[in-house]
Amino acid sequence: MEEYNRIKSQYSKFNEPWQSSEVDELKTMAADNVPVGDIAMQLQRTPNSVKMKLKSLGLYTAKPASKPWSNDDEAKLVQLYNNDVPFEDMAQEFGRSVGAIISRLVQLRVKLFNQQQQ
Image 1 (spheres, helix red, strand yellow):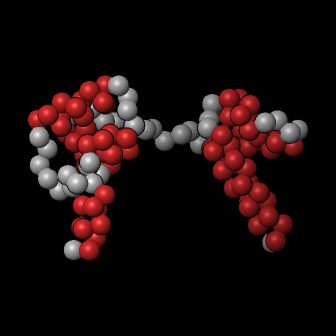
Image 2 (cartoon, helix red, strand yellow):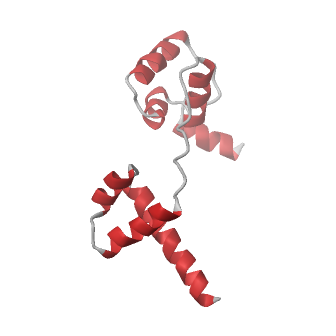
């Protein structure tokens, strides 16, 4: 009950049926590519509720997983990093986000560290 009250205080329409006016507004926002989190706040629904409704309307497709990093990509990433290439340029080079670049560099550093410890 405590969890229910916490969610209900954040999203006033939590666990309530969708009204046709809300569905119309949802369709409009989805057509305008409004992010799910923003739609949820606007409609006072949880992000999961918004996703489920969009799916039921055939308007939601999950983001495809990014392609895996190849060994060549990893080697090139390390080389660019060692040459002080800005993260933004690396992201553009690989067609990935800056966050993905940084995350992969951290993973590679951990992998290298673990190999050195063996």
